[in-house]
Structures are given as C-alpha cells and as structure tokens.
Length: 127
Length: 501
Image 1 (cartoon, rainbow over the protein chains, first blue to last red):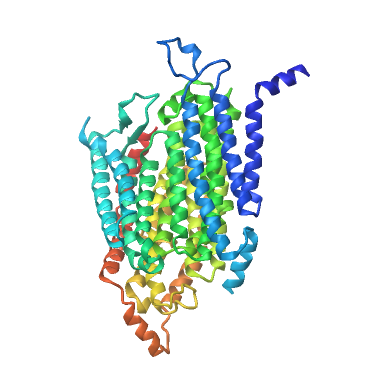
Image 2 (image 1 turned 90 degrees about the horizontal axis):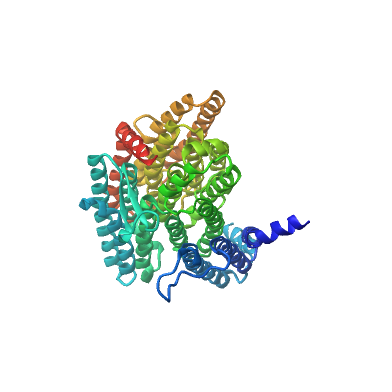
C-alpha cells in the first residue's frame, strides 16, 4: 500500500497532466459546442505545460537568476523547460484567438455554436 | 563560413518581413512584393542547393552563434535545397495561376492580407524544411496551421468558416499529440536539437526504454498524420479544399500536407534513427493505413459529383502512397515516398489551378455535369487537366508513372508479404484512379451540341489571360521535367537522405 502511495506521490504531476490531456483531447474532439471545444483545447495545451514544468523542476532548487555572485550549479534548475512553456503558451494563445474569431463569424452567420447544427444548416443550403 | 550558409536564415526572415510589410500595403503592391519575394527565394534556395552539391556535405547555421546543445540551429543539405526550390516554385506558380480568382473571391480590402498569409505560409514551409530544432519545428507547425486555416476561410462564406473551423480542430488535435510527443522525447533525451537527440538515443539502451520510445514515436506519427490527412483522419480535407479559392486548394494539397511529411521523415531519420523505428514496428502500422488510404481515398473519389471534391479525395489516396512508401521500411521506399512528394505536389497543384480555368468557363461550377465540353472552351486548362490526370493515373513520361515504378521496385526489395500487398494495392489504385480521372477527362472533352448564345458570350469574357497560359505552360514543363529527368531528382534525393543519417 505504501509503495503505491509512494508511486503516486512521485508521479503526481505527470499523472494529473496525462489525465487532463485526455479530458482536453476528448472535449476538443467530441464535444459539439465550439466554445467547449476551445476550452478543451486550452485544457489540453495547459496539461502539456504542466507536464513540462513538472519534469523540469527539481525539488528545493531555484530559478537560475544569480543575484549574489557566482554559485554552484546544484542550486538551480534548467531554465529551458520553463522557456518552452512560455513559448507554448504564446502559441496556444494565438491558436485560441484564431478559433474564437472563427467561432464569432460562425455565430453571426448561423446563430448557433453547435457544430452539428451548423453542418445540418449547410447541408440544407447546399440542396 | 561561406556566404551561402546564411541563405536559409535570410530566406525565412525575408518571408516573415514581407508578411508584415504586405499587411499595410495596397493589394497590387502586396502582390508585387510577394512575387519579388518568391524570385528572391528561388535564387536563395538555388544558392543553397548548388553550395551543398559543390561541397558535398550538409552545413549548419547557428542562430546567434551559440554552440550546439543550447543554441538554435538551421541545417541544410541537398534534400533541403531541393525541397525549398520545390516549395517555392509550386507556391509561385499556384498564386500566379489563381491570381484572377483571388481578386474575385476575396473581399476588396483584404486582398493584401491574403498575400500576408502566403508569405507567412512560405516562412513556415521553409522553416519546417531547414530547422534542426524540434521545438522550433512545433512552433512553425502551428504557424502553418493558422495560415492554412486563414487560406481556407478567406472566401468569407459560412461554408468557408465552417470548413476552416473543422480544419483547425482536427489540426489542433494533431498538434496536441505532436506537442506531448516532443515533450516526452525531450524528457527522455534532454535535448531539443535533432542531432543531439540522436546522440542521446544512441547512448541509452533502447531496450530499457522501448515503451516510452514506442509511445513517443506513435504520438508524433499520429499527430503529424492527422495534420497531413492520412486515411482515417482525412475528414477535414475535402471540405477545406472545396470551400477555398483555387490557389488555396493548390497550396493546401501540394505544400501544406507535404511539409508535415517532410518533418516526419526528418524526425524519423535525424532524431530517433531509422533502425529504432523499424524495431518498434510503427512503420508497419503506417504502412497499413497508407494502403487503406490508397484504396479508400480512390473509392470516395469515385462517389463525388464535384470535380474539385473528387480531386481533393484523390489527394487522400496520394498521401496514402507517400505513407505506404515510408512504411515499406527500406531506403528505396523512403526515396520513392520523397519523390512522390514532388510528383504529387507538381501534379495536384496543376490540376487544381486548371480547375480554376475550367470553373470560369462553366458558370462558376465544377460539377461533373456542368464542365461538359469545358476542354474546348478553355483549351489551356483542358490540356493541363489532361496532363495532370495522365500523371496521377501513371502514364509514362509523367511523374506519377515514375513514382509508381519506384514504389513497385522498392516493394520488390521488401519482404514477400509486403511486396504482394503493395503490388496488388498499386494495381487496384491505378484502376480506380483511371475510373475517376478519365470520367472527368471524358466529360471535359465531350462536345456540347447545342451551345446557347449566352454561353458563348461568357466564353469571350473569360478568355484565359496570357499570365494564366504562361503559368500553365510552366506547370506542364515542371511535370514533364519531373517525369523525364526523374533520374536526376532521385539521385539528389538519395544523396540528401545519405546526408540525413
């Protein structure tokens, strides 16, 4: 039992990240509502950043900002994963913006946010 | 450091700069800037290719001159040079041939933004070709997605927005999987540069890490194959191709889908190592889906009544060919797949742009019933559609034939099961290709007996411009070149792949 707890607490962030990834992915893929799809997208992307940040952090170490002269390397963490998270956030913000813009246009045109209703309207118009 | 080693960086930066500049220019000026950019890119890519051939090795450009494990790098070899030239030529010809349609389909004050999208798209294509850093690749994959969604939505109709949203959603699913795959790869190896990842993969025992590696390879493969519309994930492709303007369809089909495949081959070869891919068996799964795409894509294409939609489904089948080539598992298969990237790119963009000409003389429709006799009304478009159809079916002297021949000969080097499956699938797919392409071709060249005077008037108004005729001639020339001088291209691809590993 203790081993199980140990295992879970060792991999807590990674496990949560993967579960969140699954939730986000399924919502983005299967939910018909466009706004909820966008929420799913953001959950999915954030879960990857959680994963990266969790993997990049070493317990009881600091960000590599040297304030009082040179210090030994063992006190700091690698800043690259955090940098990647920042880059990723920028990317997902721009993707979200494009999706929201498309959603607004679709709402103006069809007065609904459900993908399958829009599809039905388009099919009717096509005939 | 010789001067040409700066060319990859200059070409990517100049694309981004032109994209920004185009957004504040008037439509005609934006067009001239884009055309100027394309000519510049042709010169730069030619410089890269000739330099890499003359020194017979790859070169690496370090961004900001930071050393290997920390800095960001661009890398160019023979294959990258050829790909950059190919991307530029096809992009240039597609936007010139569809110029008239861009001016008709896009809102008056947004035409310059279309050229902004083209410039940004070009930058992402070149960056995906040249980059040596896996996270930079991810960022440019997203730039590619956003610009492609913009190119689809550009028509401004409800249908276009819907197709664009659908494309974005499928594409974002793919990039989510790609991102988590890249993250896992980074966690296992601790590096972001492809060559450093390869070194790390070589030092750790793959057997101890076989599960993580299988998952990583599977995630990256599925992610990129959703984005390049491999068979079960192809549902966004026909809508996106049908809803957009002619140039956008040509660019989407010929370049956007291909850039992801290039990235996939690059990750396979340069980051993970081809032997490790074979060990995990992911290539067999890719092979199965490729074969299914070849057959089902063609069957769906037969069911279509709209020629543009039919051509879009044909793209699904042709993407299947490329993945099948990757899945064969020997070098000849990869060479054939890369050659098919060129063959399909050159041919499919020509078919789409010729459909633009056909559409103009058939009452703005590409329905099979409406295009009857269009080959007589717009002779240039008819001839280029015929050339494209011949190439896709696999008539000698056209690139489609050469790639089919290469696939068959690569199959003969593979195991007996794969050989039989490939040869049978090639035969079935060729027959199906014949069925739907020749049906469209026969419709194009069926004379309309009773031509109304009204229709004739329209014919005069929609006489193809000199520019259109010249671009279609260039397209036909490119196709004939790729078909007849295929030895040269295959030699370059083989040389480039050797530099890869």
